[in-house]
Image 1 (cartoon, rainbow, N blue to C red):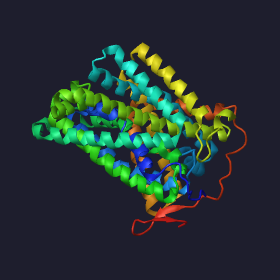
Image 2 (cartoon, helix red, strand yellow; image 1 turned 180 degrees about the horizontal axis):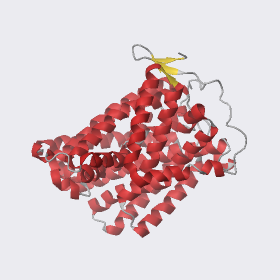
Image 3 (tube, helix red, strand yellow; image 1 turned 60 degrees about the vertical axis):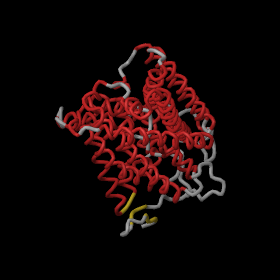
Image 4 (tube, one colour; image 1 turned 45 degrees about the horizontal axis):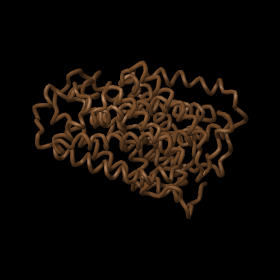
Length: 437
């Protein structure tokens, strides 16, 4: 068991900032339009569904993280539940999602920055490259530095989103909700699949739980605070976008900028550029930080070259792993800029991967937790497994990656033994978390 530390690398405030940054990615800027194209006004049901699912996912990961704070994150939970091969598979899923997910996020944010500043078509990828390199630099600097920067950025962007949404609501038109279900259940399912890109995040910060001073207490408190803030911001942005922009939302490429323009007028371009940069940088930093720790854990356990394991320990910074993942992200972004790959297709692949990783963590929770915790994890796991169907052909990507552990030439022995046997965790009669039930 990891004991509380008197000198934590990650305090609660920085923890909330990193958690929020992993959830409030640049995808939020474009998701209202993408989901509206898939389902029309009924896209709001997709938002509500995932917001209802989020507490189940969040609290399951909070209990698992409090129970087993390790740099392997979700891979560690799955390993405890299903064995070494399952742990390695989840680790590869998450690490290999980043070379696609980070460039997709960078392109979304870069597009907003370029349009807001009038940089032209080529400026989109130039801005994306700058944002990606900044995030890689923060991941290399370490979790304490990254968390401090995130704290200031998250506070500012949350304030801007609230002001923009509330300021635009007076121009809402209830008639924009009709016809409601334009593309039926299939459209809503497709919207859920795409939208999960903006709801993934709990699995990304799981490898950071060991950096808290008292993981058992801090992880739960940080999760509750993050969940409350995310729910308010997402509902505000989604509902306001549909009610204010209406059918025009389907053809919009920068819906949040349109909302900002209603509140900030001529100054909306600068505000949009700053908001996009903050959201993009924040999300990529959290994901790259988490992925580098998970890659280091895979190397520690013999699935990747041993040289990548340096920095996996508590308080360490896995710079080698971060550098390798960062280079892969830059290569993919370069290729995407040359091919002009449609944004929705680029986002679908990592979205399917993150759904799979999260579902695997939830199934691990269904096996490891007890009482109410087990019921919550099982319900969320079933729902999320169904959500994966909304990803269509993109769901084949996790299946392809699943063969990598079997092909790994670095496998040596079994996963390192834990310091003590894992303790079952559940929920008591009054909803209190109980350890050793």
